[in-house]
Amino acid sequence: MSLSIEQARLLIEPLRGRTIAFLVNDRQTNLSLMKGMTAAATTAARGCTVLDIDAFFSSNSYEILACLPPAAAKSVCIHVPDTFANTESEFSKVFKTDSEVIMVQSLNTLYHLFQSSGVGSRTRKVAFAMICLAYFAKASGKVVMVIMYGRDKVMKIGGGGSISDFADATVLVEDSRHGLSLKCGRGMLWPEDEFHLRLL
Image (cartoon, rainbow, N blue to C red; front, side, top):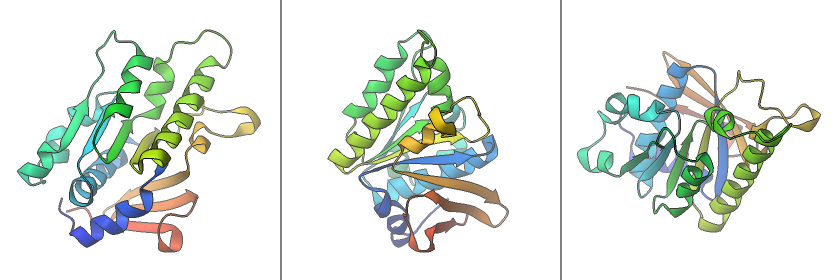
């Protein structure tokens, strides 16, 4: 997939300094999102780092990176935590990257890997992680994307809200034969609160 510099900038620039939760319904939509956002990140920003907690990005890396120029593909850093590694320690590595775009894949897996030491402790840990990401994005001017499967009903907070509410903005992702539709569910990012990407 290729994007013009102008298209990539129109997509990426409004995201700088923010943490954005991208809500996907299935793995195919997630894959299409990764193709589009990786192409945009390597075109309009200084590379991207993926905290690939569930190994989704790495297992689909050939398809995601195949259409990128070699130099762009090399600017993508994929970090897959070791099987028995401490989740909190692995998560903290995203704060040390020089990349301008950071992707966390996925928030659902992060939630389920956090050790629970009491009722609601996982929810509190993920909420704290999101707050830290939001501060990091604002302080550094980086783009922080967290991917979340919207079907996961476990990740709720008090009052019926979602963990995604801790992000600065929420984007609903829809995939079709015409391309990818990114619709702002909360927060304003693009004109008319929507961005369309054609997937080639």
